[in-house]
Structures are given as structure tokens and as C-alpha cells.
Image 1 (cartoon, rainbow, N blue to C red):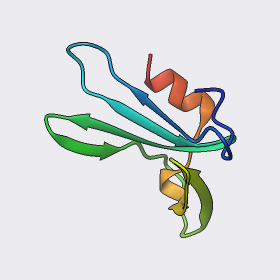
Image 2 (image 1 turned 180 degrees about the vertical axis):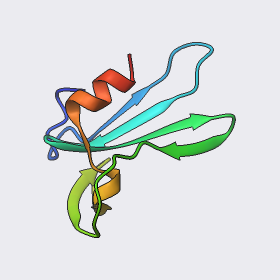
Image 3 (image 1 turned 90 degrees about the vertical axis):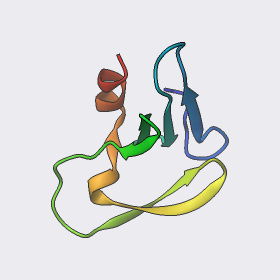
Amino acid sequence: MRKLDGDKFTLVFFEITDTDPALVGGGPEYFVVSITMDDNIHMLMNDKQGKSEISLVIGGHLGFSGCKHQILCEIVLKELE
């Protein structure tokens, strides 16, 4: 996941047998994380307030992410342990 640079490497898919998959996209500073649980997709969120957005490249596509969906690398690694 540390190779996600927001340019050439922008998406990683985590799947372990008998667990639900997780997708992490973006980089190098901010990421968007989605986790599938019981066939429902959940977005990992932070506690930031406001309406600002940043642009992130995820899976080769430029998009915009609201501040509540911008997750720092250390937090993602901790949550995926």
C-alpha cells in the first residue's frame, strides 16, 4: 500500500480467505478506503469537518473526494491490521 503514489500506482485490493475484501485508492498522502461486509460497501471515514474536496487518482481515474473520506496512510494501515 505504501507504493500508492497517486500517479502510476493508485489502487490496491486486499482479500484474505474467509474475510471481506477492502479497496484502498489514491496516494501518496490521502486515500479512500472501501470495505465490503455482508455484500454492503462501507467507506472508512474520518472526523474532519467541512466541505472541502481534493482530487485523487484511483484506479487510473481522476476524481474528487470530500474531506470526510480522506484517510491518512498510517490510519489505513492500522485499520487493515
